[in-house]
Image (cartoon, rainbow, N blue to C red; front, side, top):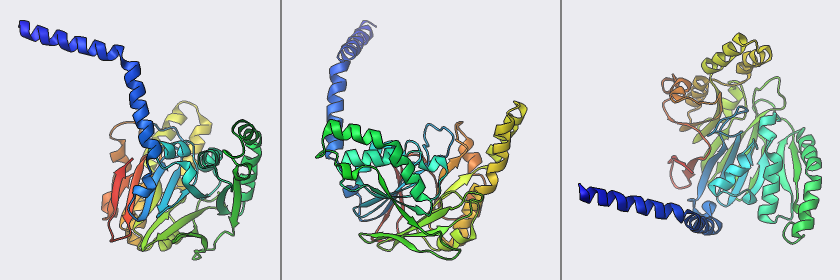
Length: 355
């Protein structure tokens, strides 16, 4: 017994010693982490191919593991970002795919939850990469208005940073963003809206009525392919554009879960929220319908993002995915912030990991 007491005392003293030295230990851990992160190049470490990182897997409602909609696509040395929801740019930093590496941004539509992080993305790209050209923001006609608004909102901030850090560190010509509009495609049309380093990006029409314009995007690189839906009801046009792709990144709203919010809002007398929750299912896609699209299109893997509502209680993921495996016989991933899907150029593999 005395030996056990002695061991316990020794352990306790060790813990007290560690606790008393926690500040210098924490600083040392921080220094090592900074050295590793500053020197790291996660894009260069990826195999050549097409890679999709969810920098935001959620929708407009708060979710601790799913930020506002944001998808980074990496092809070789090129990284572009589709939509810029709240927290997306910071999640890029957290995962090591720094905003300074962003070559271009693409907007699917102009709902607030898809653009409210755009100013921060452009700012962090500029200050983190010393860019001399503004961030190109591609989108259907109307993107000019979005870009002009953010440019005006950040005008004073740009002046402050140039005055403080100097033009060599933050070149004034690289601040903000530049709108690159394209005409809204008609059904069946898939115009190329971006091409760089072997990456080809095509836009196509989706159905998010009454929200117009609304598009999805298809990415092709080295024989691998990805379609990102944006917000949409089940869309035959999207299904046609996704034929045979390796990865379909599709939004999903669970009617079964949203109706619970609707009923709770009605019971609480929250008539405005009750009306909104009654309205939203008709311009989104259920998880099962997204799976049916994937099955019909013959895609290899289905990645859910823009998850609505937040899955805050353990077990709700099973409710969300109920019936999905019956509708689609390919690979299925319920996305969260940091989900990375890699499609190496050599072969037809689909590799899923978490950053």
